[in-house]
Image (cartoon, rainbow, N blue to C red):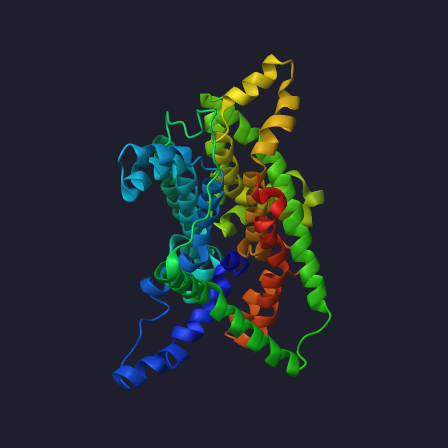
Amino acid sequence: MLPLAIPSYVLAYVYSYLLGMGGPAEQVWQLWWGPDARLFSPQSYAGATLVMTLDTFPFVYLLARAALMNFNVSYEEVARVCGASRLTTLWTVTLPLMRPAIVAGLSLAVLYVVSDFGAVSLLRYQTLTYAVYQQITGRYDHAAAAVLSLLLVVFALIFLVAERWFRQRSRFYQTTGRYRAPERKPCGPLGTALVTGYLTLVLGAAFGVPAFLLVKWSLSTMAAHTLDARFLEFVWNSTLLSGVAATFAVLIGIPVAYLASRRPSRIHGLFLQTTYAGYVLPGPVGALALLVLFSHMAPFWYGTVLVLILAYILHFLPAGLQSMEPALQQVSPNLEEAARSLGFGTFHTLRTITLPLVRGGFIVAWILMFLQSIKELPATLLLRPVGFDTLAVRVWLEASEEYYQLAAAPALLIVIVTLPALLLLVAKDWRAA
């Protein structure tokens, strides 16, 4: 989960230093293959793919982990008794029941990569989102930016419709009264070595090496006395905005996810799908749309943090819905119907039956939206009030000029601020739910 604390643009400039010409990785490579040997450039497809993979794989991990923690192992045991092998049981029983969580995690990863701006801009890798920003800020061609943005939205809608069809008419909640929680099993010496080695490699590439460089550069910056008390203000601004946006997004998302899951209809399905448009709409385009809207219809709110909070909610609410909706799908409607037959109202049933059962998925939703809000860059750049800086803005301003050491301190503070939120993911009070 730790890689969620590192923004994609931080990973981008760290790997630009590591894999760039004359960087540490190339020096080691040349020791093996000669002075003329060259590694792949971080400004290439391979470099951009590496950075975005390391940044987005926790989406799939978190939702799959939550599904496994609530998994009924009785189904696997029945399959094994019927003669199915471990691989057959995994393929025909376990993975189909986990399909909503896996598909939701993949959807988050795909939509995040499609709309990412910070990493591709620092890597100078041409994507539609980066091209939209260039058209707006460089050529001032809003028509071309609108066409490119429309392509992004069409691509996202096609993907979301396909994902919705993939889950159509499927049921993934437990239909039996017999439930057994999964138990951890020892792997043995060889299995333990393989698992530990794999996790060490992934954690080192996605978090360990970047965190080490951030600490190293931050210490050198502090030794040079270039940090001041303003960084406390940056931390406060980032934390307050992200926490408020994530909280209101969860409150808004609860009825949306509930109606789509428990009261399916064309209107509710259409409303759910339209909320995903904000996640794939490029940050610069969405920010400019809000600027135009508030400057004409609500000028007294123009240039305030309320506009920025609204931008966060519109942009990251789909990330929460992708966690809340699968959590609701894994709760049998029979439990709610039983409560209603005992005289409970809809609100009382939701508060006392449904929400406690989906608490883990909703906490994951809040944390995902908090983490993404605190790392948000393009909307913050365009919508922030005058003199209002966040940690993400400071990282961007320094890293875009290749002042890696100056960008390290605010980047490290982003990691430190987000670590308490990550610890909630392993808190025992909801882990056992």
